[in-house]
Amino acid sequence: MSTAAPTPAEAKNRNETIIVFALSLAAMVVSMMQTLPVPILGLIRTDLGTSTANVSWVTTATLLSAAVFTPLLGRFGDQHGKKPTLVAVLGVMVVGSVIAAVATSLPLLILGRVLQGAATAIFPLALSVLREEVRPQKLPGAMALVSGTLAFGSGLALVATGLLTSGSDADYRNAFWMATGFATLALLAVAFLVPATRHKTGGRTDFLGALTLGITLLLLLLPISQGHEWGWTSGRTLGSFAGAAVMTAVWVFTELKVSEPLVDMRMFVHRPVLMANLAGILVGFGMFANFLGVSYLVQMPEKLTGYGFDASILRASVQFLLPGAIVSLLASPIGGQLVRHRGPRVALGLAAGLGAVGFGWLALDHGHSFSVIGAGLIVGAAVSFGYAAMPAVIMASVPHHQSGIANGINSISRSTGSAIGSAIVTTILASKTIEHLPAGVPALPAESGFTLTFWIGAVAFALVAVISWIGLRGAHGPRTVEAGTPAAAPAKAAEPEPAKTV
Image: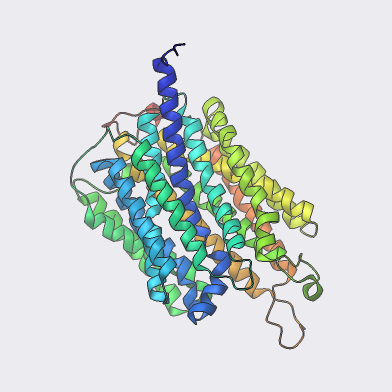
């Protein structure tokens, strides 16, 4: 009995599905690296015999590394090929994961985390590959699915780390060995399932622009992530912020003067791109405010504080955080359909509404597990819709040869938002503590600190609503912009490309 050969349309659809799977896996692994050490910082501090301030560099190092390498590698992929850049970056992530797993000292562990952070460039590179390989009518859904794995991966890392370190003789290195396995799997998937790059712009790499942008981001993100330890009014903190402002001017001047800039300033300030980056900061903030706020809240000892659920790290991850992470993944294709049929503005507006409702619910009632889990489900869907909308705005607004760097900058905006979220949550909870605790009990946050955190999250998503309805007026779904099309061409960028017939 003979089997009919697949039609060209069926073959194309199968290839697209395989490519989306491989890139979704890679994006998920990247997001796992960001949140993976959060539940085990205490174990790392005890095992390596270091201080709380020093161990915080395990998370800070990844953030700073991502900020420096993501735009450079995104642009490098545009110029010299996205697949080889993807494979190389995944290889670096594998090496970093192994170093982190075998590290016996804090400096070696931080080195591994720096290498893991460089892999953040995978996400913008993955979106650029989708733009080349997926048909326009399927592109919104594909981008939404890959984007949705970011929120899912962040939640999955918290849950998996909780499972691997739940015993009495827990070893935090198990989490990094798990990361090594996932990174290796993603490397093999991309190497064998993703086709070679078709679009390469060539040209010289703007190392001066990369250096000045990297220094700018370092000076900005370092005080955001370390301000709680340094003191928000200390000389180091204020000096770093001042230095960031000066270096921003130096970077802009540099990019305006070089012939082949790392970031085209017209593209950078083009209204839809600028609005997508502002939305990225706010959605990234909301995601981390939810993860950290809920995680700390449910672990509070009710007998001492009068609130909380006495949850272990494992219970906090599985019962309270995992449902929202799963919903964020399931909501991804819905977000893609929204972008395709209604445009990214509607998808981002819905994300804003859901996020504001979810955080508002948490602020008003976080004393019942049903409310905490239910609000987490809503916020998870909000983050997923937001992540689906932002790449669509970027792809509709920039030409092929700038898609990698444009999505790289958007990735940095989300990372910046996450860093701000972590800093604000930490600072609020440390500043609002319970008085008159029994002797020997360390300071514990007052319930009002969590309430304030959740209201701030609601305000952040309310600002996303302003961006979607005012800042993105006229924005439509992704289209294929040929190389050479000016980035700052709002009228043309806003026109959706007609669906191609297969």
